Length: 81
Image 1: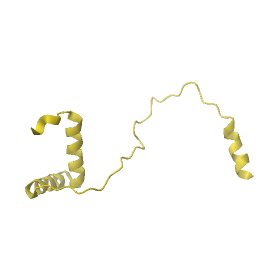
Image 2: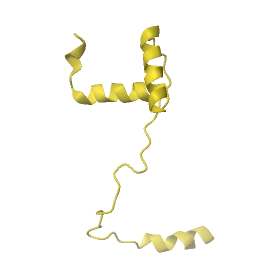
Image 3: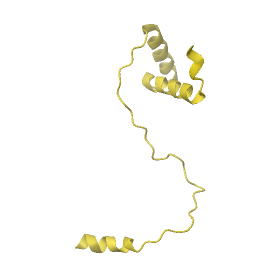
Image 4: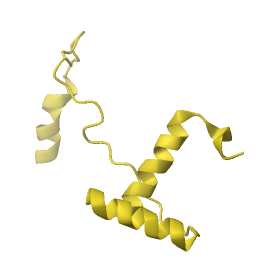
C-alpha cells in the first residue's frame, strides 16, 4: 500500500513543452556491448599491434577495436582490394 501512495505523486506528472539540453553531454551513459570472439591474426601483425598499444598505454584489443572503427567510419571498404 505504501508503494501505491509513493508512486501516486508521479501519476499526475506532466512533461514540460521544452527542456534545456544546452549543458547536456551526448552519450554520457552509453556503454557499447563487447562481444567475445576469436580472431586469427598473423603473428607479426599481433606483435606490431601489441607494441603500439604498449607505447600508447592502452590494451591491444582496444587499439584493434579503434583501428577497425576508424576504418569502418571512413567508408573506404574497398581499400583492401
